[in-house]
Length: 581
Image (tube, rainbow, N blue to C red; front, side):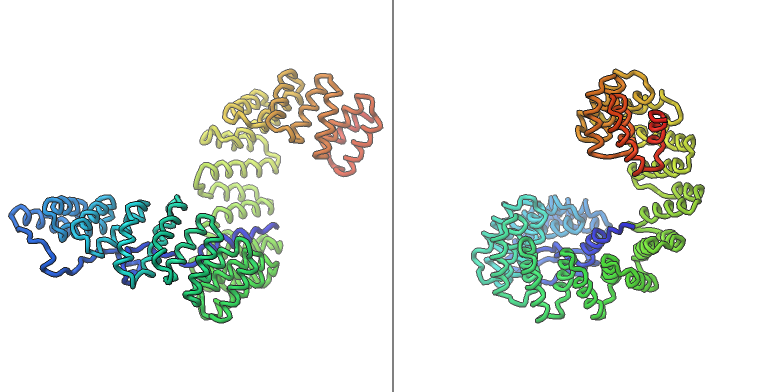
């Protein structure tokens, strides 16, 4: 059985072992709030003298009470709009602040941006309004508008420059114009040559732009300023992995020797080793993390899958069974991989039981398909078909695939009428599905329904005018039934134009020329087809044309050599019996 565990591991470790992404929080010096707490905009405390002397008219009082009542009763959209209108009317930064707070907390981002702009205009000295406005501008990709505000914020709060640079980075990462991002952060970093975070952010932007020399130079400056900074070490390794993976891995290994408790670095190291196919070393790093007392199911699963990749199946099975006994959210994946291992060890009944235990998750569909295969392999066709019908398809691609799978089960059982019925029912729901049309056409031909055979293939050609397979199937079908030979040759020639090197189509063209009595052209195509793929049916065609052309010695050799390689092939046997009774 072919295990594709390297791809599975990579997908798993992208989530299990990646460094925790930086959360996009407002540009403020305080620590980020826990994820479960909503982001709020706390009002700043201002000296009384700094506030405008706002006349509390009946109209202002009425509107202010109305917006607060609306806010308390959950009508946040109305409250934020009233607050913004009132702020514009009164030009009071306190009301602008309230409008910004209401709009931001209710996720009305366009209105919030307008309110923060107004607040900053009315109170240019407010750091909170400046930080929040910058955050929103960067998140919205408005780099040019954010630039002067960032310059001002960094200059006003130099002692907090490193923290501000680190908060800028995740807001810039999604921005598609990497050159503009790099230009912005390089400009911002110029006045701060001794701030490691400034160099780190420039290195990140340079790496995203593909400027590897600049990225390496900047991150190495960051490391010089902060030698024990995990994030700088990891970024340096990421840059080096592009051109010097051995150097990158050596650097990380030495760092871990001095800093054995650097968990995120060790996770990165384990992933990097895995990507370099250094499976034993990668597994050892994951084991060290687990040995530190961390109860991480994803990492334990990664260890088991690496054991599979190393073909240490018994060890992998033991590790997976331990995970199964512990329970948890990865039970579906564990059952699936145990099913794969059981199949590899030819314990089909056990594998089926594991697959049937997969109740949810990304492996559910694959597990259900494996269960269908094993039931059919055990001779339980009805149970296999019932299993197909139980599978909940997520999209039309899966719906079509399930119909084709059931049709294949019936074909293997020789039940072509039932197969055609299944395909017809599938086409009622998916009338333009190319694979269903093709399979239905070929099944109709086997049942002698040449009208339906032609109808389905012509519809397929209409849907997929570049389908060489459809042209070839229709033309070859005509040739096999010795009908409409001129059109048949045109069809296979069209297929050959679309796929000039396909051996099956070359065979069809050669057979078409044979039916047309053009033996020289026929042999030219059939020899090319047989050289590309010594298929027994191509050999049968080549042998027959050689025999007809008087080249009986070569025909005899082609046919008998092919029969020796494919002793049970009925087509070869029939041709030999007919030509050499």
